[in-house]
Image 1 (cartoon, rainbow, N blue to C red):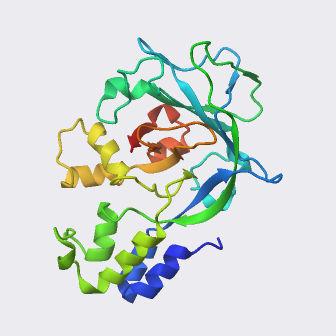
Image 2 (tube, one colour):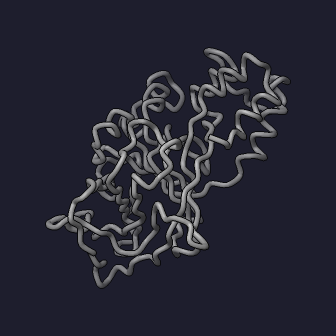
Length: 285
């Protein structure tokens, strides 16, 4: 991987022992952007999905059909940007209920009754598929082809593993920036300047709009019974990894809330077993 921006950041701004702990958390990812000038398309936003015979468009019973968000061709992605558990071939199809057929319904990571409103389907390689038009009352999003490039990704600063790496075991970030350890301040400023774009992404660490998305998923999985940041909540958050994030996109006429982002997360063991029914969605604006 040629992109090592976060490794360089740590080497320039952190004490060597802290830099080693933090860089051990970095993960490769595939960043997606609009394909131009004949660049290979590895994924698409919008359009109509290609589904196997007998598989209808996913629905949220009582609320309506899910909108087709994106397709990802697994064998076209740069492999060096993916976790080993990620499928080596086949296609991932992402669907989500976006409120256009029922403005009062929305998917919440905290409410298991709504989880059916976001689904990921895996279509194995060489499966015959057919174009599946959208229902007449649900206009498809304009199709946008995306190309992919491998980059480094870094964990959110508030995640438990990040706190341990930067602050040491058992320590929390101080309530006021003035109380931040002096040796970390240049790194935190540089990190904030470097990570300013959310965008579309496969794998790696999520780039949240407002706080760790892993905590939101963990909170829902634990039934809301644990306070944010307690030990059980931290442990559950560490079990989840990003499958994909899709940002609001003007070309595809996609806008999630107030120009927000959709985040699909999965446990690595479910990813390895292709249990995509266990994927969870959270939305941040």
